[in-house]
Amino acid sequence: HKSGFTCKEAYICMRFMGPKEEERQKRQIKNEEVPSTSLEGVIVPNPVTKMKADLEGTDAAPGLVMGRAYVVPSGAITDSDKLGVRPEQIDLEVDKLKKAIHTTAEELSQADPSEHPILIPLANELKEDILPKAIVGIKELRLTAVRAVEIAFERYIEGTRVEHLKNEIISLRDNVISRLHSGAEYDTLRNLPAETIIVGVDFPAVALRPIGPKDNIIGMVTDYGGRHGHAAITATTLGWAAVTDCEEATRKIKTGDLLIVDGETGKVWINPDENMIKWYKREKSKRLKTEELIPIDSCSPRSLDGHIISLTANIDTAVQTAMLEAVFPNGMRKIGLFRTEEDLLQSDFSTTPLLLDEDRQFIIYKALVAATEMVVIRTVDHGGEKSLTGHKVRNPALGPRGIRFSLMRPAIFLKQLKAILRASQFGRVGIMIPMVTDAGEVVRTMEMIEAAKRKLDREGKPYNSGNVDFGVMIETPAAVAELEKILPLVDFISVGTNDLTQYLLAADRKFSPGDKEGRWERRFAPHHPTVVRALRRIMETAANWGVPASICGQIANEPFYIPLCLGAGCRYLSLSPRGASEVKRYIENVSIEDCRRLVDEIIQVLDPEVALELLKAFNHRITGRKPHKGPIS
Image (tube, rainbow, N blue to C red):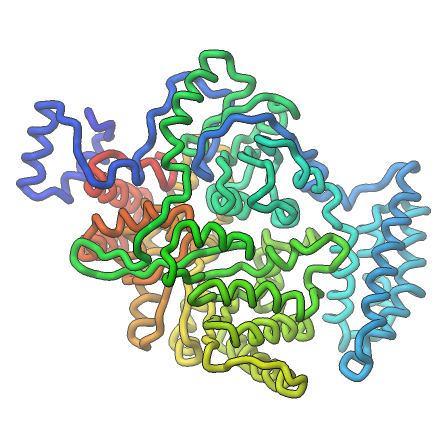
């Protein structure tokens, strides 16, 4: 009771205690001792004010900040492009359309006819067929430029026999739409004043793509989004405090309001009074140490029972190597996951991200490889909530995501593979493909890599095959089922637990049903016995084949979930540099054998809420105090 446990939690906690531990706990309660622990602060909440918050949501990214709000208009991040335009907007839409079409056509016209014989005719069709029809749609039907382009392409495909070119035409359509989604509606996010907190319904990838670590944004509040959505992960990476699932945030908060955002408790205060500001300043000074990038002395922490765990970094952009250098020791800096889509979008909004030329990609990869011991480069993961164009598709999580997208657009994929291979002359590099569902996709990718090598040989561009490893992400139920066919083909695998969890449980990781008590997350999260069972199967099967298997999902970044990773058999974790010190400290104070017993018990239970209580009790035993991370208690 004094520790704040419910009866159910206390009962489960006692199951982990031996007689000596139980007696010690009784003495402690009797004498009201303050528990001492070497893990103080790892997954323990800081003192929190009792003052009532104006908004409460999900604690999506840690941090305590105070700043002025900037509310992003909901139309900028919803399906507003499907709506009509007012008469005074027609000329602006037509001009925007003409610019996008002519820029795309000019780029296509510069292609080598011997290599891409179809592109020049498509450039002519773009100007002579698509453009006039789209202009009619804008002027006569008052369609937006985006909607007019969609309809014009639909009519073009219906009116011509181009089934054999359908993929190229769809790619061309996405190209034009990505130019129309030039990011102008988000340009203000790049030029905000210092100490700004952005507020919106939710922020998809296309909204956050202009934002880099040096921008003036310090926090984020959203109506929806969840703890494991793209916006929350971006906030964690960039060091923002973030609270999601506030539901009424965009209605209650106005641009210019002073906000206090506590990303550790999921609370937001609007226009706080003087007493609240004084509390913020006191609390902020206490937390500053925990919010800094903390260097670690080793990337190979050892558990209490002697097992070595290897830590590598996840980064979204090349500029985040500065974070890597600040945290990881020299000579041990390895990147376990470089998400290429963010940098492919960063260049400028006049260039189509997916058609970035090979040389510009090569410059990015070369800099990364030269600055680290090893880089695993994930090929572009387009689709789902990470749509590069902002173009809405039906069932995005089930559409042409990851490697499906790349294999449907071989010309684009070939450029990226060539650029990665060229970077291999400067150090070790891994090519990792996302969203794999079967061994056939792996074989086709291997064939594409060989084709890229042959093309580089013809062009006289050097690369070093000996420095290149090839791997896949395991993040779909199909890939788990096909492991025995996939593993003989690859050098390594990495488990993407964010997507694997949502696909295994048929539960959107961003979904928030509006229950402040967190009932949804208590049932549909990585502690679910089905997910834990799948993790163990992946690790054991990979070990049997002698293939290294890492976890690069969000659970590798949260000490609360680390026992599941270790107990399932994982010995390689790839995580944000910001979380490295806490995870390292946790590993050094836990026994792998204890973690294994915890996983044994979790995979046997029938109810995920019981699994959650077991995990909480385990963490309580390790830290000596009640954990606050993981699904809402």
